[in-house]
Length: 158
Picture 1 (cartoon, helix red, strand yellow):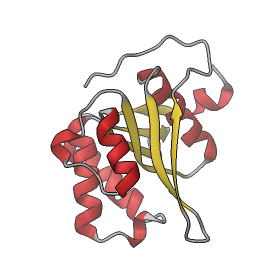
Picture 2: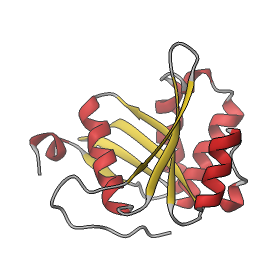
Picture 3: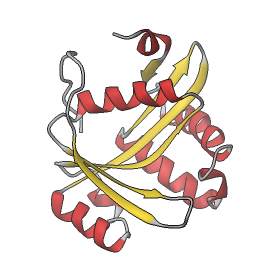
Picture 4: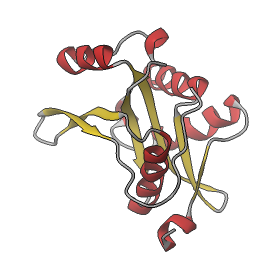
């Protein structure tokens, strides 16, 4: 374990209301999430938390990162990549593709630590998502999830 990894505790919190109460103000204070309409931000984060598709990074008691995703079948993920329209929430518990929806961190090391935990949970799957470039270009990424360290693999709970 690296020094940076030991600095942060990455976990889900007990209780969906506490998770929402921590995640929403944290994300709403950061771009691009600050530009989201409140209803859209709340709906998206609530879906991630209810499905257990999120991680938070803490430095002591202070929230320093949030990572949220959905899991799709390869067919649903391919359709999402082609249309940039998300499948219905009812299909966000698929198998095979982790679609990264939200990533925010106060420090780059916190994001790295959350991503490392996510790779352990979903090793062997594919990671997909959309990056919005400053020049307005939208880029879809698609890559295999590989473990980058010797830590044991953790299987996803759902």
